[in-house]
Image 1 (spheres, rainbow, N blue to C red):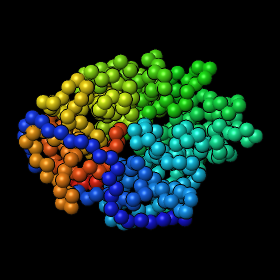
Image 2: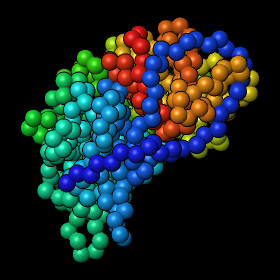
Image 3: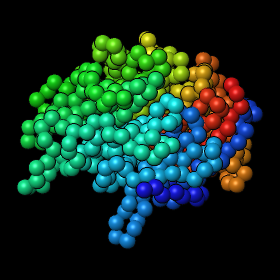
Image 4: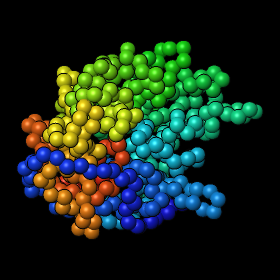
Length: 434
């Protein structure tokens, strides 16, 4: 059963903008900007496909006294209505209940034809499997059926998840679409969550391969859900992941690389090193969360989101890290006269690598003094979010234009496809060739 809707974009989060010191402006290569045509029932996030023009999202439709939930896909380039299908397993609440969450319920295949879906089992307390949605056909395939779908903490008298049942989170596809990497947790005795591994699921067969136990999982009471970001290298040989325990564990938390052939784990950066990079943007704020990450298309660098969501105001920033040496820096944005050690007047919300990896497209909250606030969206002339291009090698920044506040959610990975399409701030942008 599918539901189709076509309405104007919903403004989800309003953020204040700032001013600052004068900067030279460049003419932008943005040749088109259109708000994503999302239904008013959209959830708190959209998840962009690598092609830069498709997005997946949750739609919640109230029917009488209950809410029906749907997994939806919109193709902004095709100009067609979103196609929504019921999730393959009941979802007790929103797929993404916290806009600041680093748990990813879905993952896009590189070619944009399939969507991996796990929901949020560890947040919702509801066991689920790893499913594949064929976007064109609207059909689901279960890859990890463990014979159970129900509460992970059953009420008295209920059987609950059997020992050996598995829970998959943070799905990410291999570049060739043959495998999906996940954090996999096995249910132990008396419904306790047991071992946690970085595992590979073969898409053709559903066969699982435990690549490596997660660092710190060899304790009497291992913690599930410690992976906060997962990304497969463009050449398919490595998987990068960030790990953070609820009770910080400096011995194992940080940025890791896993060799796909051998399962060997290497910690590229420990937590103090990540904290030092983050303080390049916020000298007086301690890093307390590490989030989504993305490889540059050439596999040379990683963009890793870090932040402190308990600070006032919230502090978040992408870190650019050399995948071989671990050397890096906070995304270079010029200082502002109103900056302090704990606050930035111009700060990034979303970012995406360019198709060749030489630049980063970013949506920033705020403008510098002298920058025009002309909106790229003629239908919404008041610009509050700046679209900027940052050259990775030189750090040179160019203002491409402004946008109204669209879907401005922290730790949000935008996308910039090879065809010049991009998803940023709830908009589909068309960019001239690099």
